[in-house]
Amino acid sequence: MTDEELVQKAIEYRKNSYSPYSHFAVGAAVLTKSGKVFGGCNIENASYPVGICAERTAISKAVSEGERDIVALAVVGDTPGPCSPCGMCRQFISEFKIPKIIMANLKDVRKTVTLEELLPFGFTDSDM
Image (cartoon, rainbow, N blue to C red):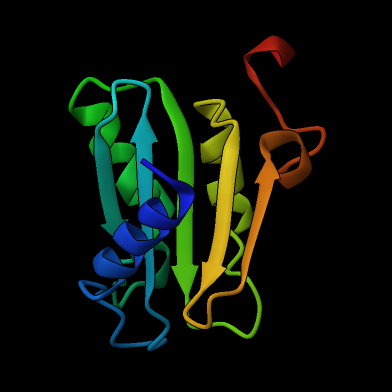
């Protein structure tokens, strides 16, 4: 699967966003080493901390299906520039050592970064 195809999957998942409070819909898709794609969207809650971001939804779906070797993640939002994962998602991405993160928006603006670029000095299992 190409990076652009993964971004298109994230755009599709974005349509399922449940964001009645912020009206900020985000979609994500992850590609596993086995070639499977899992997607997710942000899901808000009236009690704000209870919500979940699109990136964590997609990763959780992959892991819950037994896939732990994730090779790429795409995240898409309707932002002026590439949609960037929040700090909590960056740490979650780090846990699964996802090497390629594709940040995109709906205007075909893309930026691909490595995990190290996304979260330098991240807290990992080697810190424990």
